[in-house]
Every structure is written in C-alpha cells, then in structure tokens.
Image (cartoon, rainbow, N blue to C red; front, side, top):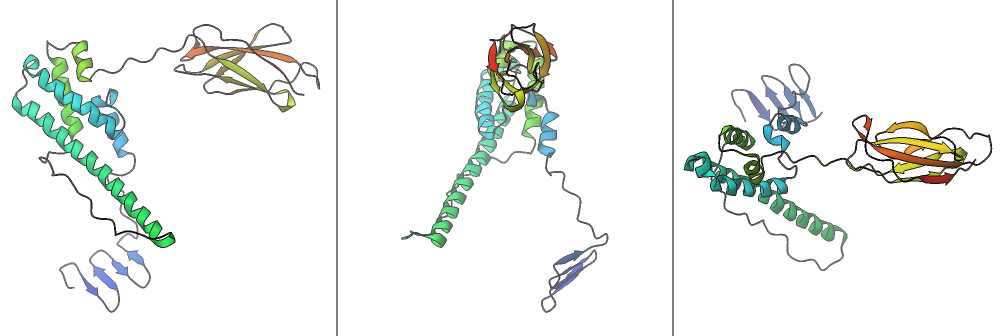
Length: 279
C-alpha cells in the first residue's frame, strides 16, 4: 500500500513512514525520539480531577446507577419548578435530552457487560466442558439511540444550578427537593464502644468503633491506678505496647476512649474495657 506518508511491504513486514518504522520481524517501533507518545488527556486520574473542579461534585452521587437515579429526579424537578425560575422549553428540554443520553449509555454498559459474561461462560464451557453445549451466544439487542447531545453534561448541570441558586425564588428547601444541596454531614458519635484483647509480651490491642468521628482519644489505667492519657488514634485498633509495672508479671489494664472531632476530644467517655495482660 503506497501513500503520501509511507509504504507497507508485505514481503518484509515493514511500515515506512515519515516519523518511524514498524518492523514485523523485531516488533519494535522506531520513531524520531524513540519514546512512546505522552498519555492522552483522558488518561488515568483525569476524571477525578475534572470532577473535583465541578460544583456538582459536592452533591452528585458516585456510582453511575445512582447518578441516573439522581438525574431522573433532577429532570422531573426542573420541569416542576420551570415556571418558578422562568425556565423555557429549550432549557428543560436540554435537561431531558441529557438524561436520555446518560440513561442510554449506562444501559449499553450493562447490556455489554452481561453479554460479555455470557460469551466468557460459553467459552469456558466450550473449552473445559462439560457438555452438551448449546448454540453460540447471539448478538446483543440494543435499544434505539436517543438524540445526540454535546459532551459536558456536568458543565450544563453546573451552569443551570448556578442560575437557579442566583434566582430570588431559590430556597434551600427547593434545592434539597431538586437534589442540589450538599447533604448535611452526619454528627460525630457522642460515645465510642471499646474492647480490649490481651496479646503476648504484655501488649494489649484496643479496638474502638470510630463511626463518623475522626478517631479516638484514648486513656488507660493499670491495676486500678490513676487514668493516663495514651494518645489519639485515627484508626482502630490502638496497640498498647507499654511494659508491665513489674517485669514478667500480669496486670489488669483498663481503657476508655472519647470521639475525636478533628484533633479535639468530644463527647463522653466510653465504656471501660478491662483485660489481664499476658507476660
């Protein structure tokens, strides 16, 4: 095949072009720099970076199925509040078109996923048995495609939400109804549940239920003595590695914890977890 940029010679397996050569015999790609091209802007991590720059990232669900569910409500409420916010058919219709396109693509993903699993299962049965085996898997039946929309659905959501929130008729209650208000953060627990397990060498593993708190502020005492703050721990369990008061002897240790709000203790002390150490 002769073209303006290069030739393909069947006998040698070489592709000659202005920038490099592909040699079938060696499997090497030779270019002007000898380096692979830089990754595309659609590479790993770009989706997350793009999402963080959007207003919708504050309240949009994470999974595609949940996003579709959210978008159905969003579309319904935009139509419901259209008169309130002076939205015309071009705006409400565009939201509906975006929903149709999103639903279509998510549906296709599930169809192909299911069909791919069907093919893989058939292939495994064909190769490994047992038989008898039925007819080959058929092609997937695809739904009709909706109206094509431009890329950047989330940008259009951001723009319309900004318009709604700038309107004099907007209230937090309406925003919550539409699904465009950040969900209230769950209050940290007022108490934690603590357990303690004796480990070899007089060590104790202290487990706590973190819940929505930022961690645990832990204290302990030995043989009924004074309480001593052992420190803060962001993640359970906490390992108490203090040596025993008397080397080689078991002792009774007790532990309590309070929830952390940021770096500060909050709420009440937990139950007392008691354990006898193992020297």
